[in-house]
Amino acid sequence: MTAILNFFKNNLKFSFICILIIVVFALYGKMLKYDFVYLDDDVLIIDRIETLKDYKIIPSYFYKSVFDVKTDKYYRPLLMLSFAIDAVAGGANPAVYRFTDLLLCLFAVFLIFFLLRELGFNEKIVFAFCILFAVCPAFVQAVAWIPGRNDTLLAVFVILSLISVVKYLNTGRLYWLVLHGSALLFSMFTKETAVGLIVIEPLMIFIIAIYSASCRQQLGCSRENGNPSLKNKLIADTAQLAAQRFIFYAKNAKTRLKGIVFAALLVSIIYALLRHEALKNTQLNISLIDSIKYIYNAMPSVLQYCDFIINPSRLNIIPQYLNIDAFSFVSFFVVLCAPLVCAFLLKQIRKPVIVFGLIWFFVFLIPTFVLPQNIYFSHRVYLPAVGIIIMYIETAGVLMSLFRQKAASVLFARGVFFILFFLFFGASFFQTEKFKNREIFWQNALIDSPNSSFVNANVAMFYVDNGFYDKAIEFFLKAIELNPANSLNYNNIGRAYLLKKEYLKSVPFFQKALQLNAYNEEALYNLSQIYFVTGDINEAYNLADKLINLNSKDEAYVKYYQKVKAAVDGQKR
Picture (cartoon, rainbow, N blue to C red):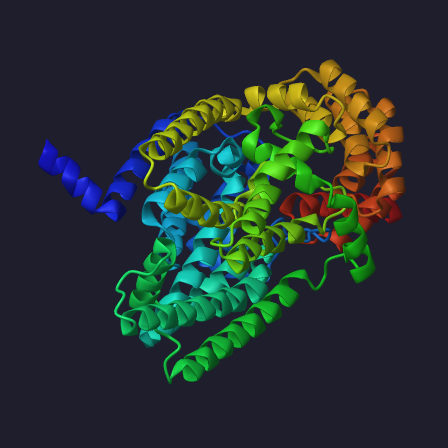
């Protein structure tokens, strides 16, 4: 038994993998039995399952937007590719998609552990923080909600890109440069947030270069003075690690840096061209001024995201509105300000590393603010939170070094870790229950956000699909009351009346939907059908003609247009 324990103590990387697998499957394993929740997974997977299973159309994901409509602003080919792989493997079986989410979670956390280890942080402290990261309740949505995998997928490729940069600079081996370029391109194909690497990558290289050279110089000076151990044990440890791992300040550093720059430029050009092709026909263009305005308006959400990370009771499935109070400022201080205060008070803390972690957090979070009517999903803080880990690992490393002679400090640190672990694990285990199926998901969303138009509308859709039309109309009316400008809600309430066969009651709602959005395809289709059924063939044709000009690819629309056109031609004869 002692031999086994010693083996795990001496092989931290292997131990981390084993513990990570056990913890993640204990937390998320039950969700393999969960169903779809009908928040984007219905549109992206269920409604497209036959298309997804056709591997021949995989190339089209790289020159089409995600939802493939004219108001779409998302370009996520890697997300769609991951769904296609799952569809080929298991069709519409949700267990297959959820198993992939589990694997992505494991891979992402392991890569974070590996990167921080490569950057020279204390392995044991990295071990502890990465385990806490794996069970943090704020990230349940990234794993338990199938489309939330976009953020774990992004983390995988972003971290892999940074690891390969460090490896290439250290070794000069070409395959690391190729891996870096590929991971960088894949991260951009996953989510636009990857643009943050433009800032993070050179900053990371700069900080590593400074500290590796500085620590090497200090280590050399100490040896020349005949003092193998520096006065400050922490500096000695860091210097030794730097001397072992970071050697890229050698003569060929410039050549390697040029290779990295070339790879980044090539990848950026490929990405820009393909993204332009995918979104060139979009009718939703956000100007620079609007982007700045949206970012400014969303900045208070930083406090809410800090709340999500350390206070599970504040987690909402769909937090459409900011919920900020006095405790939010406490969370903000604990999550972001405390390491800065420690860096100011303790000279041993490497201040540039703390600043690097803070920049990481904001660089990967702010791009998510460039959206009108933003919904502050907790999964969006998955990658930004790695910056918080960097800040706290640096701070914890210094504190542990200062108090390493006191046995009580070690017991205190272990106690804090286990308390946080069990609190996080328990809260996350409870949070995953909310993603069990469609009914439970939207019930909890309504409890969390009763005044959200979006939530009320989706609850109404659940009742429509289950045949409770009067109940659906009640929730649609509540959604319209909360947001009178949403064209979809008017269309959907009109559809509910259609299903009740109360055609005349549906007409004003379809007309209002088209008044708010002339490009609402469903409203055009539904209203045209009513006119056709009630005998107004010419008006039915006018609307069908507009519909087919908007979307000539939908088979149902084409078939209906041909029927209406034939009726019009028959009248003329």
